[in-house]
Image 1 (cartoon, helix red, strand yellow):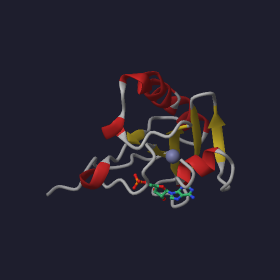
Image 2 (cartoon, protein in one colour):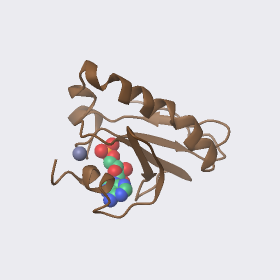
Image 3 (cartoon, rainbow, N blue to C red):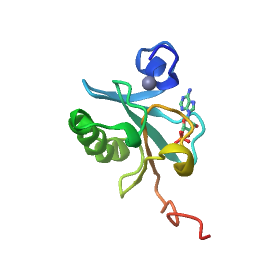
Image 4 (cartoon, helix red, strand yellow):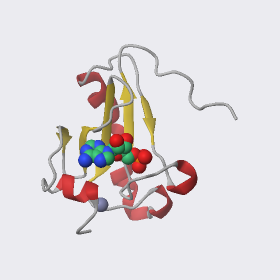
Length: 116
Ligand code: AMP
Ligand code: ZN
C-alpha cells in the first residue's frame, strides 16, 4: 500500500511519536489527542478495516489488543483505558488502515456513546 497514511508511518516515511513496535504491530500517539492519552495501534501489514479481516489476520488482531494494556499503563493511563476501532462509514472510520484507538488518562473517559 504505497500511499496509505499508516503504512507510510509504519515505514518511517511520515514521522510519528512511536511508543511501541514488534513484528506484528506499531503504536504511536494520535496527532489530535481526544484524551490525555490517545494512542493508535496498527497492524504493520496493511489491513483496511475490521470489515476486511480474514482468518490469517487473527493472530495480528490478537497482538493488537494484547499490547493495549501495557501501552496504556506505560503512557499515563494506569487504571484502565478504552479501545475503540472505528469501522467503515457508519463507524466513522477516516483512515483506511485498521487502527485501535487506546484512550485514557487519570480520569474516566466518560460515556461510551452519545445517546440518540
Ligand atoms: P479514525 O477516525 O478512527 O479513522 O481515526 C483516525 C485517527 O488518525 C484520528 O484520530 C486522527 O487524529 C489520526 N491521525 C491522522 N493523521 C495522523 C498522523 N499523521 N499521525 C497520527 N495520527 C493521525
Ligand atoms: Zn496501510
